[in-house]
Length: 192
Image (cartoon, rainbow, N blue to C red; front, top):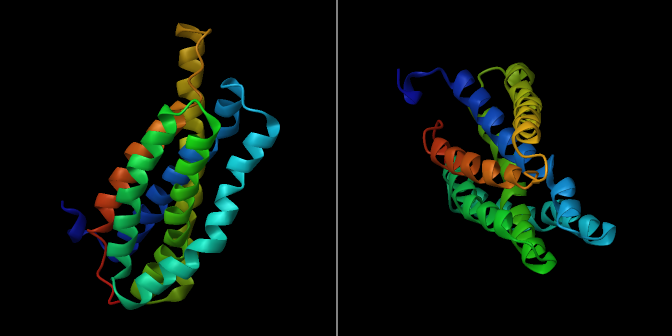
């Protein structure tokens, strides 16, 4: 069965699930990864603040582009395709400023996708009361990736306890962002 053959409700639920897999994979282990690299508490808090700064700045750019020039699913897909290499780049960083820059640009690209995916869902749900049933899959995605990454780290603790693999969440997020970017192009079309 192809993705297009699935009912819109199921495709939208999968969209929220994937979206929160990306966000959860990169954020859940990030502060531990940075602490393992020797970053100070202040540096960790600056990187954590990139999400808030992205949330402030991105609606101005993202909303303007998605509302006027691109269908919502194309805008979201492009954002995720651009997020994937940024997360991969962040995974490779061991110094503060390059990591801060990569995650700041990631936040600016990722934050507008939350509003855009909500708009896509409301546009394609015949009954807006179904939104909660569809959106809950985002929360399930967040919890799922947390459990998967916890099990992954537990395995590494047994195999190689001296090595830190907390940064691998960024790599997992990069792969998931690529998958989400591709998936967005299979969502129901929305006009700009």
